[in-house]
Structures are given as C-alpha cells and as structure tokens.
Image 1 (cartoon, rainbow, N blue to C red):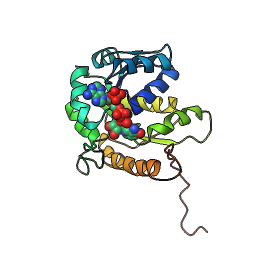
Image 2 (tube, helix red, strand yellow; image 1 turned 120 degrees about the horizontal axis):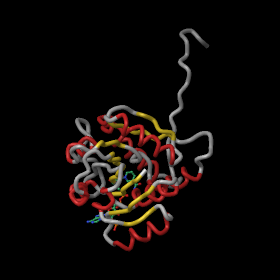
Image 3 (cartoon, rainbow, N blue to C red; image 1 turned 180 degrees about the horizontal axis):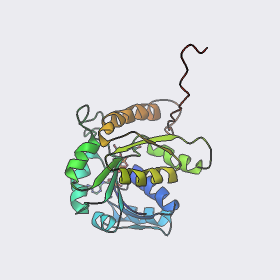
Length: 220
Ligand SMILES: NC(=O)c1ccc[n+]([C@@H]2O[C@H](COP(=O)([O-])OP(=O)(O)OC[C@H]3O[C@@H](n4cnc5c(N)ncnc54)[C@H](OP(=O)(O)O)[C@@H]3O)[C@@H](O)[C@H]2O)c1
C-alpha cells in the first residue's frame, strides 16, 4: 500500500516506520522541522520518504491522521483533496492541555473528522494503544497470542484494508462496528493512558479480548 502520514510525531513516526518495515511505501509529513521528517524516512528504510502533506496525500491510498486535535483543520487544509482515500485516524479529540475530550457521548472525534474530510473513508484505529508499545508488539508478531486492536468505520472495504495494516503491525484486529463506536473507543484510550502513564509498570501496555464458549444453563 501507499501510505501518507499526516503528523509524524510519537504515533505517526512510529506507525509510519513500522508500515515501511512491513513493506508499504510511506511518506512522512507534517512536523515543525523538515529535518525530522527526513531523519524518520532515513531510519525507516528505502520504502519511506519525507514530503509535504499534499505530497503525502497525492499518491496515497491510505492516510494516517496523527496530530493533536487542534491541528486537524490545518493539516487537512494542507493535504488538499483527499476524497476517496482511506483516512485512518488515531487522533483523539483532546482539549488544549490534554486533560479531557472535547467531543464525546453524542459524537466522536472520528465522526467529526468524517464531516470535515468530506468524501474520505474514515476508519478509527491505532488510537487505543500508547505509542510506546508499538515496536514491542511488532517485534512479537510471530507469537500466537497477539494483543487486540479495535477499529471502527462505515466503509467495509476501507475497514478490510485497515484490518490488514493492523495485522501487519502484530495486532489482532477487532471489528467494533460503525464509526460511531469511536464514541466508546476514544474515551477507552484515556483508561489506557492511565494504565500506561500513571502506574509503576511503564507505558508499553496493550490489551487483549478473550472469548469463551457460552455456558449452557445448569452446567457446573
Ligand atoms: N502518543 C500516544 O501514545 C497516543 C496514543 C493514542 C492516541 N494519540 C493521539 O494521536 C495524535 C497524535 O499524538 P502524538 O502523541 O503522536 O503527537 P505528537 O508527538 O505531538 O505529534 C504530532 C505531530 O504534529 C506535528 N505538528 C504539531 N504542530 C504542528 C505545526 N504547527 N506545523 C507542523 N507540524 C506540527 C508535530 O511536529 P513536531 O514533530 O515538530 O513536534 C508532530 O510531528 C493525537 O491526537 C493523540 O491524542 C496519541
């Protein structure tokens, strides 16, 4: 796949690097210094390069939006026309000091994004784990028990593409349903952040759902 990274910080830098390692063509864009983008591209190998948001968007079939909520309008405006493209968002609708969400309950960041990025096929994914765990999950991808990663969206074909990317990075994709489910997955990330950053066990934490056979009535 050809993947454009819109926002090459903690999440975009790492996810882009791993997409390139997994064999995808990646363009890193949107940082305050071009040097940073070039360094990321160099370190990610010969499938990666640096560019402007417009260049990242132009030839991409998948775009990753990984900016602070306050930068969404700016990066979208710089990216230009992205209609028809798959727009994966890990961005949370956080307030300026990152203490709470500014959209919740009756909408989600992902749904608000879909209104802004008209024509783009928005999928919410990757935002429910901290950046610090991404390399460890990728390194452990041959293990049988993979961590889960929820994703949601309204376009089934776009979701199938994103599920492939989730698998490429070492997670077990869990289809949580329509984009509106981001109303639940986005606040869940605040729980993950609590576990990652407030405890004594370090930030490299992921999650895994386990399913069991339904117990028949009266079974012991
Ligand atoms: N970090 C996590 O573990 C995590 C987990 C789940 C979800 N999220 C969400 O993912 C999104 C990205 O988070 P992040 O931690 O990756 O953020 P980040 O490290 O701050 O990265 C944001 C990127 O945007 C760039 N940027 C900011 N202002 C800019 C401007 N005026 N012009 C050009 N570029 C600009 C930054 O440039 P510089 O590189 O120059 O700073 C950086 O590359 C957020 O919505 C966050 O809520 C983060």
